[in-house]
Image (tube, rainbow, N blue to C red; front, side, top):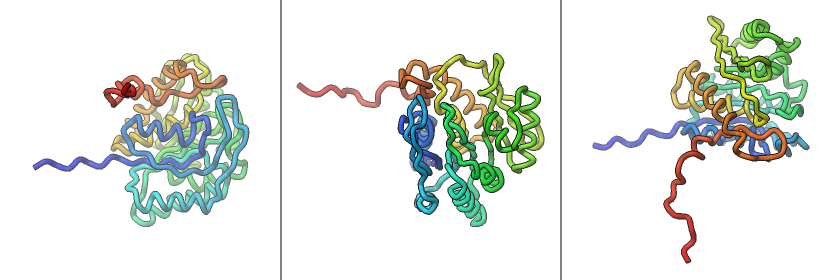
Length: 288
């Protein structure tokens, strides 16, 4: 007797929309698709942006963010959640309370928290009063917190780490402060290697890749956290998901230069694997 196929894993992204398609919800859904996961989304903000910068931001009301969350979680069997740009403190609080409710109801979800504060272009994406809400309300629910060096400094209220030893100390301080595993990303650092540090309260793991000289870095953090989320939704342990996501992003950074998208900081190519495959149709030329 033929066994029915297993259902496709489902991942949910709670984040802002990037009108240029390189970051946010759009990058997350592309990454989920590339890694064989069905993607659902909750939009927290609309941004008018491109590879050169962010022109405008329109936050979604927290009640409507909750309505989207409820619609997804009441119907779809979500296996993992990531949060990205949450815009302001009321949205952070609403999302944190709803996800905490899942745990109280006996259905805890692995949550990857990407504390998106500043765009690649340097534009601010998180209100100042929301930083504490991310740290104190959302991060304690996380299976993983993925700040970059600048975000870690803001969460801790200190200067940005200027060495690997300082980054390690901040990763450990974030774990103590937020009570969740931390992946401190080193892409904004210097040196021949881009080093991310994972600390889970027991040991420190160093994930390193050769640093790539490229301006095509738009959406890097979104793609990394989305890739971790997708791999966890597929059943990977946390460390294996981080290692796989690092490899995925590194390949996407390499492929990004060939996209030719935009005149500023171009996007990571999170569809490089799909783009290399044959089109799934035999003939798309019109009949004459």
